[in-house]
Image 1 (tube, rainbow, N blue to C red):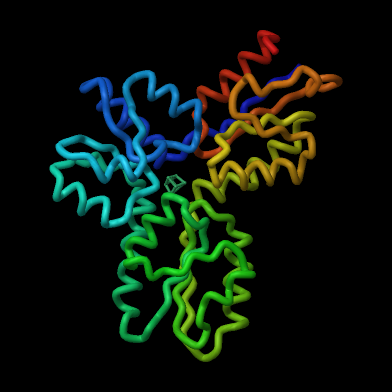
Image 2 (image 1 turned 45 degrees about the vertical axis):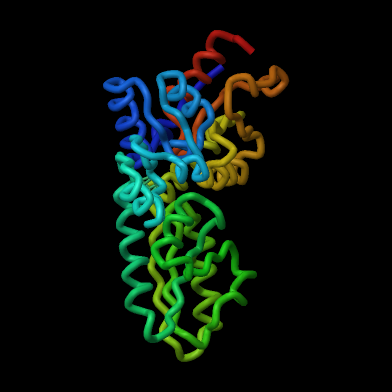
Length: 286
Ligand code: SF4
């Protein structure tokens, strides 16, 4: 049986840098808090937990004092930094530079649009950590839209500035901007395509990869937005694509009559985990 790993899969540079930063501090200090899962991948979170990375949620964070906390690549709203300043919390800020830039642009748009009642609209997933960080730049004023059906939340007689969560799909974003343009009256309407190409550039490659093998194992955490999206792409070109999080998910019957397996994953899936799947198959341990 042919077993191939997609060489384009594995961490994007933002996640890679955050994980490296955590490893570096853990090696020095032995323990570290991380605000939220460092990456939407259970196996990687567990691996880092074993070497001292303790994940805390926002409720726990807002009770801390005199501590060191890592901020992951998704970024945080200003309230997180303000709390740190007032409570002697040393932040190790691993916010991805692309997300940081997006936060700054959104903050500027919000400030500049106050007089004209311009609305900042974010195409993204409500409650997602990155989106919370973006909405925080606007004092909670930004309107989050998940699909064109939610356009009614926007007052199209007023100016609109449309942004996107970095990991959203380009097609959905273009569709939304077209719908908004159609509905917009005379008011100014600006589209800022802020989708990270680290994700969207993987689409043509993963489409091609998924079409070349009789079975696709797509490795991702369930919470990963880009994981869901990239798995959808695999499934659309190869219906025999399986979403797996750990090697325990593998089922013997999937391999009946299969002569080739392609292993790929999300931008939050470590390469080492893809290799673990390949090794498991090579050793026939299912
Ligand atoms: S997907 Fe892009 S924006 Fe998000 S962490 Fe990775 S490199 Fe940064």
